[in-house]
Image 1 (cartoon, rainbow, N blue to C red):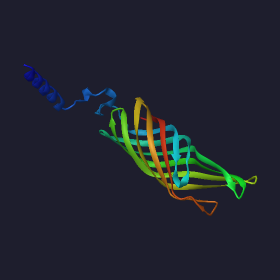
Image 2: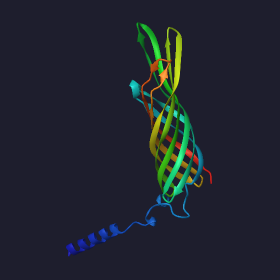
Image 3: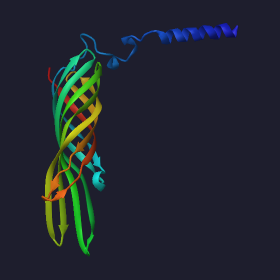
Image 4: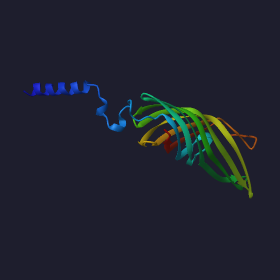
Amino acid sequence: MKKPILASIAIAVISALAQPASAADFPEFLRFSSPGGFSWTGLYVGAHGGYGWTKSQGLDAKGGFGGGQAGFNYQMGSFVLGLEGDGAWADISQGVNGLVFGVPHSVSFQNDALASLRARFGVTANKVLFYATGGGGWGHGKITGTALGLTGSGDAWHSGWSAGGGAEWAFLPNVSAKIEYIHYGFDSATYFGVVNSGKIDVDTVKVGLNYLFR
């Protein structure tokens, strides 16, 4: 008797798994968008904060940053296309103390600004948007050295590319929260007119809020 019963149970389970899932089988906030559902189309502005780090060129710099962003989304069914620009003040830095010919000195590096202009491509499950993003990236660096009571500093802008991805959740009709990872690949820049920095890579993780205009 056991074998027919077990076989019947197995057939029932396989049949249930083989049935295509309907939208009603998913929690409401994860259901794929449909006509009359939540729409991501529109202009938005927001603010963000996060943490960044780099180990390029022997550095071990890290620290926080904060700023704002603005962009535009256009939704087509379950797909969302967009363009976003952002900028932030940063303190991704490292300081080193040492001796040169017996003279105490200190040298510090600071990435004090980050910016990007990126395209976004995402898939939405109604109020949750999962996306990839990529475009141009810019960062401002500053090198400061102190020795014998004298201080000198040089700064430069680095340009390059940026890419990453994230997820965004519209928890109110016009307000969404996001978490995002962005990698910046900066080209070399010249400091003090003679010092070539070499290429600098910066990794960042941020959280933010957006207000969507409808």
